[in-house]
Amino acid sequence: RHDPQGGAHFLEDESTKIFARKVADHYSARSNQTLEEREASPIIHLKKLNNWIKSVLIQLYARRGDAVLDLACGKGGDLIKWDKAKIGYYVGIDIADGSIKDCRTRYNGDADHHQRRKKFTFPARLICGDCYEVRLDKVLADDAPFDICSCQFALHYSWSTEARARQALANVSALLRPGGIFIGTMPDANVIIKKLREAEGLTFGNSVYWVRFDEEFSDKKFKSSSPFGIKYTFHLEDAVDCPEWIVPFDLFKSLAEEYDFELVFAKNSHEFVHEYMKKPEFVELMRRLGALGDGNQDQSTLSADEWEAAYLYMSFVLRKRGQHDKS
Ligand code: SAM
Image 1 (cartoon, helix red, strand yellow):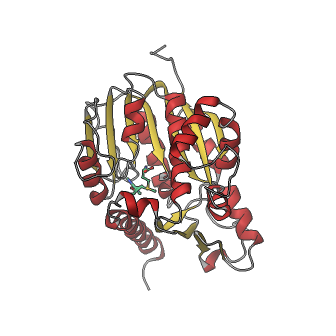
Image 2 (image 1 turned 120 degrees about the vertical axis):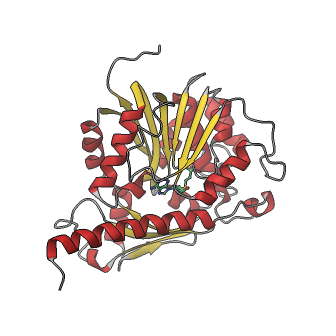
């Protein structure tokens, strides 16, 4: 038998890396879809809804000329949204080299991509790397400070261990200017745990997604377990098939406070839709994206199963404490 302390530590470290690699390989392997493939996706309206949520967050918080840090930027699906906000500079980082390559192609306005368009007006730096493993302040010393940081559908990958969850927040905190904004969207732990407790076994879902918890969580209480490393497998039709980790929001909020963040708001996606669909400019944006018909849940567009999958997510806005140097 191995030394319980040294050995266990080694094992935990190794498995954390293996899982991070698994996540990276999963996203790297996902190739760009053609416009036809995208429109035929069973979750096309959910994708459009999520794009609307990200656009609203960006329109609410980005200002002309801002320096933007996009953590886990993926294939650069938000580049156009940032361009519309007339930002001044963009740095995107992602662990998946395949995604960063696609992001670079998209940024360079590659002709065969479905978002064929003119080149972007802002300069960009695209980097392949793990945002939760190491300090990023040295790598990005010449690019910082940033006015706004965005981490969309990815921060939960940092909650595999306390060290990674802290590194993620430490990185954002170190790179944002005082008064800078951190926006993100991630799974809503309250919803996921509630659904798990209502489920018969350790799995729940519908025609577009399923979530499966490991056997070790069969009591569904999580009392004795650490709040970090609560792993489940998430499958979203035509999108995700990955190990993911629960982010208990109250803990996330207090950990963020340790890194000088104050919470501006946190909202489940359903609440987010109801709130921002009261504003005509965002109703118009929703109409253009085509996720919901008239602002209410409309079966001719988003299906009931997609709407339920949307409920699994929440958005947050944090502000870095300190003097605002921009008005
Ligand atoms: N933010 C993009 C968007 O909204 O379109 C991509 C979201 S995708 C669901 C999740 C992304 O997180 C993937 O591109 C994946 O490679 C990235 N990711 C996961 N773990 C990461 C890590 N440790 N460091 C950097 N990126 C990571």
